[in-house]
Each structure stands twice: as structure tokens, then as C-alpha cells.
Length: 557
Ligand code: C2O
Image 1 (tube, rainbow, N blue to C red):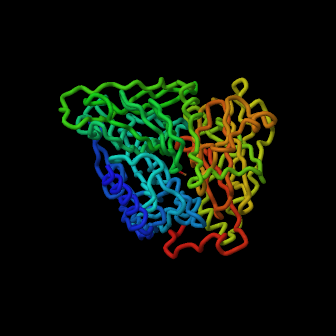
Image 2 (cartoon, helix red, strand yellow; image 1 turned 90 degrees about the vertical axis):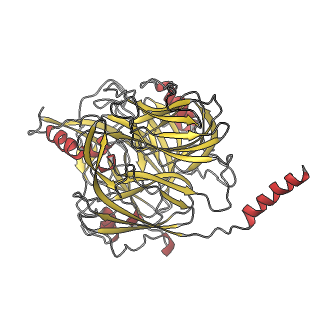
Image 3 (cartoon, rainbow, N blue to C red; image 1 turned 120 degrees about the vertical axis):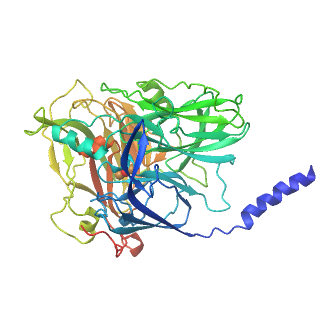
């Protein structure tokens, strides 16, 4: 007894004393190349990184410097975004095309050079131009510093679960044709788990992801929603999951039968193989509670106990119904930051700048389109127009005429945002208009869904920062009553949040990262239609509060 206690103790000491946390340099080569891939009885060329689908995992420790040399062998201009990495003063490595840099042209290379500080957990990377992220994506795993344990029981093993969408035809062709007609592109042909649709789809025997587990052991799943347009429910038959982290921030653990994850978000769960040894389906299906077409196709993968033959039929899971708003709201309400002395939730309590942005969908005239109209989207009635040069370059080098800094803090005129259906366009304008934030100022932004054309849930992503989701509700935000209900103690901290259908979400962040930072709906359809804007965060006083100089190999425009 004494001896075993002793060895546990010395093992602890060993972990804490013998491993000084030395940051390392991690180098990756990403070759953007086209490869023939077959799914759903159909083969087609897709754009990949290193011929892999999904792409390679970036595996680093907190504190590491990372160099990713990207060489573009594809016919498209390409840029890669490291979704959720804060890129302090270093937007040059952030990657959204024409926002922080011009894309890498065919035949050229660029090295993304960044250091991962103050973050650990699961994030992901994806192409950030056109719809190329349909096939160009992968996981980023940031391990805690050596000797720093997780704040939850050490799992036996871990697995990445990347959810995506597969189209049978070439995605860029589909999107171009749809835009010519002024209509939304057709929905994907299948959702996928680690690039594979699973056995509910034809020709999928070879295209089913399976993970083998040992009875009694606990596993960490790093779940990423890389889908283009679907918020997803994810579940495992017969097992409960314990949520321990979202968007690379630890949470207060809670168990759930299914999780909800929007495009852009990540969720780490612990799962114990504590059921009778068999084969169980993991499944992902869209959550969609708006009065528009529901995609109820289900991707499946297999959670397989060791020693169980493949001939055993897997147990089917119970997923929440695609329109189960109650499940979605209840799930989101359980998310809380861990908020311990080691991992505090630094929620801004005094707010310097109050912003209120309305989401609008609309129809613009389009003489060449099929119905004579074209769908558009806007924030505060502004449809964002992509510039021809990188906004960060324009900001850094003081180029005039590229953007304006008069993005309005409020919509032009208040209205009953979520009242009766509205078809009017409310005089939407177009422009490359940014909102200027003072360095280190605190910002509260309420994002309000509206009934312009249709209410719908929108996953909003902010580059360069994490934010705290201090409040959320259905209907119109009430500036008199709702702030009193904000959680300013342990709200979830993340980089992407789902604004509920016909409702609002309030986020807070500190503008302590100078540069130009994109904010957009992470449904690619809506980003394309203009549901996006950017913040320009001014430099602070000292050199350490100033945007870094651009790297020498920054792609030319
Ligand atoms: Cu995950 Cu601007 O993107």
C-alpha cells in the first residue's frame, strides 16, 4: 500500500520536475494538390493538402512556434486560415483571402509563421477562399505545456472526429452555376465523418470511419464541425459524452447524449467504453429549425469494442429531431467556462463600446439571373464587398481608397426585427466598411437575427479573438431588461457562436489584438452572400502593442 502510494507520488514529481516547458519549432509542408477521390460511387478530382482528405493534423504544444510552408499546385488561388488561433499582432498568418493577405497563386509558396500562446485544445485549419474548404481542412491539436495535465481525467487515447460535407460534383462549378442563376447552390450529397459518409450511403463499405475501443477505457474525442452549411447534432448510440472543452477553452464538465456543433466550432468530449461490448453507431445530422428545407441525411461511423467482429450490426443512435429547438437551446445553456484560478474567465465587466448588428437576408434585382433576382445578405443593412488587396496591408501601409471605417454601430433604423415576415430589403447598401476599435477597449456586440426573408440560425465567427457569450435569447434583444440576465461569471468563451433562429446573442471581448480581423457567418452560403464585416483594431502605445511587420514572402496581390 505504502509502496504504491509512494510510486504514484514520485510519478507526479517526475511529471512536474523533470520536464521544463521548452517551446519547440514545428515545421509542416502543405502541398495544395488536386487528387481523385471517390465517395458515393463517384470519383472526382478534389483540392487537397498533400493528397489527404481530410488533410494532415497540425500537432503542437502550447508555446511552440509553427512554420507551415504552403505550396500551391492547384489551379485556384489559395489561402489557409488557422481557425481559432489568436495570431497576436500577426494577422499576416491568419489567412482569410483579401482580408489579411492576398491568396497564394498557382505555383507560388508562402510560409505561415506563428506562435501558439495562451491556448490549448482542439482547433482546425481550412482554406479561406471560394468554397475550397469543402475539401481543404484538417485538425489542429494544441497540447498543454509539458507537465501541465488536462483539468479532467487523463484519457486512455484520443481521436479526431471531423464532420464535413461531400458533393458528388465539383463544388466550385456548382457554386458558379448557382450564382449565375441567383439561387443557392444545391445542398451537399452527404454529411461525412472524417471524410466518410458511412454505411447509410451507397458504395460506402470502404468509406466508413471506425474507432476501436477497449472495454472500461476512457477516450477523448476532438470533434470539429468543418461542414460548409450545416449545424450538426452528433451522438454515439448507448453512450453519454462528457463535454470538457469548446473552441480550445476548458468548460465545466457536463454529460450529454448528443452535442450540438456549428460550422467553425470544436468540442472535446470524454467517452467511456462502459456498455456491453458490441458495435455502436456514431452519427451526425443537421440541426435546422428555420422554415427552409431541412437536410436530414445522416453520416455514421462506428464505435467498435475490441474483439467484436465486423459482422455484428451496429446499434442505431437516437439523434434529436432536425428541428429540435428546445434540445439546441438547452444544450447551449449548459456550456460554462471552467473559470478556475489556473484557467480564469476574464469577462470584460466595463464596456467601452456597445455594438448592435442585425442580420439581414434579401433579394436584389439581377437582370441576368433566372428569376431576375439574386439572394444577398447583410449586417446592419450593409452587404460586404471583398476588396482586391488585403485589408491588413491597406491598413499597415496606409493605402487609401481600399476601405472605409464607418461601419455603423447600430442598424440605420430600428424595426421589429423578429416580428411578422418581412420581404423588404430596407435599402441595403454595399461597401467595404470596417469598424474601428481602440486598442484594449472592451466591446459588447449584440447580434440580432431578423425576419428579413427568413429567420435562421447563424454561426458567427470572429478572427483574432475569443469572446464570451454573455447572453442569448429568442425574439428582439431588450437593452433595458436583457443585460440584467447576462452571465458575467463563467460564460462560455469561444470563437464561433450560433445566433439562435429568430433571436439574439450578446458577446464581449477585449480588443487587445491590433490588426484587421474578419467577422462572418460561418455558413459558406451566407459568407458568399455578404454576411461579413471586419474590425480594424488600432495599435497601442508600445512596440509590443503594434502590428508586426509583414513577412518578406507575403503573397503579392
Ligand atoms: Cu473558420 Cu473566417 O473562418
